[in-house]
Length: 369
Image (cartoon, rainbow, N blue to C red):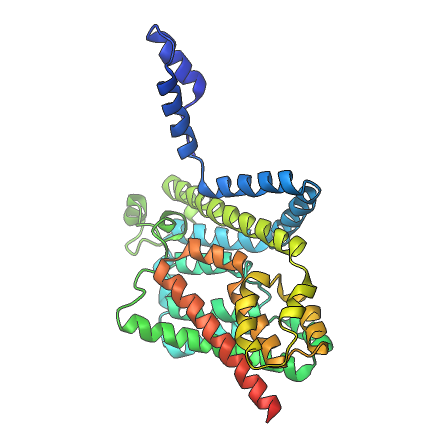
């Protein structure tokens, strides 16, 4: 945002010897507001509405958002710094080359690492942005992207204690399997000519690999200079990338956490238990649908699902709820929507929902048989 200062406008009008007309004022104000970021408008709208309807919730929401941002800040800073360093050194092509050999091995490793990594559905976004920005192929990134929010070591221990070891192992296997399916499905789609350019056009400057600078081309035949701080042009590129990528990720994750804080405050767990407390088959697809808006986070879902199973919910529906919510919850989906092109976003959602349905039905069939 870089609005024209109003004092400059006033001086300019005074120099012309007249007062600004209402139309001129309106034009300048429209120009000013049009330059305000849409995410900032959304944040202002959320908190204005919250202040008017439930003012006591405003401090709670701000505290929730601040705590979430502090928790995730090490991952944001690391991923932003890595992406900026990749641009400044000119090493994007080297990074992409490491991940482009033997796709089957890379997809399997990405799915395995994702199913064991300690990243939540929002926490994985800056990592994915850094990988795509560095030129890593979409197929292994998709495998990691889908599997990562579903399980981590701490969640495994808590899930085993509250939901039982069989359920927890089933969820871990589902995370790995859906990651594999997502990775190999994406690889097949790319070989058919799809998803050639996954990053959104709006964020290529912030997250995508930049063209090699003239200084880089002159400094090295391959354009790679690891001590990039020695060249002013590369230092400038690093600083610009740091600010652009950090701003993009920070604003979207802040909005995502603000929405999550409202969900925590206004969606009672008892309502979900009442809707999905039946043991009928349709509770599995219903759990997938409800999991998208109602899923709070992986740790909050553990006691919720344990209580719902005690109320009579079938375990297949509980598994479907946790998988669908973990990958496609509204805060995470918003960040994904802003990061990639629409066809990649639709593919991501389709893979996640299909995988959660399949996992729920297969697990219910296994324990019933």
